Length: 130
Image (cartoon, rainbow, N blue to C red; front, side, top):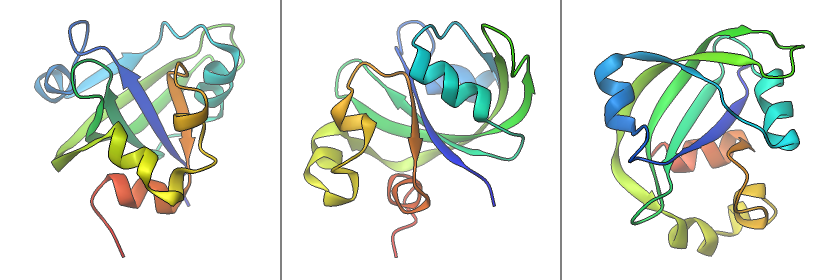
């Protein structure tokens, strides 16, 4: 069963639209120890939500992990593949209001750039509500 993560990006630097256009990219440049731990724990097939931090802070699309290089390295490089944009962006205010995210680092540690998600949280953000 795949793990689930949320990756934050500044859209003026690299947006989900950039990822969709390029189809694949290497996700690196992360320095926070907790975020690095999450990157090191990723495996091919893991599912991702891409979250843009500027403007209306929101989850905007999905992607998946296709390779992890240097999982033991100081700065692991995770190759990801674009999925589809979300049918409707999910703003941070909606995420914070949903009890499903009450204990999530997404709302507790706002500056964390890589956040583990439960399967239920991923499905909620990706539009696969039960």
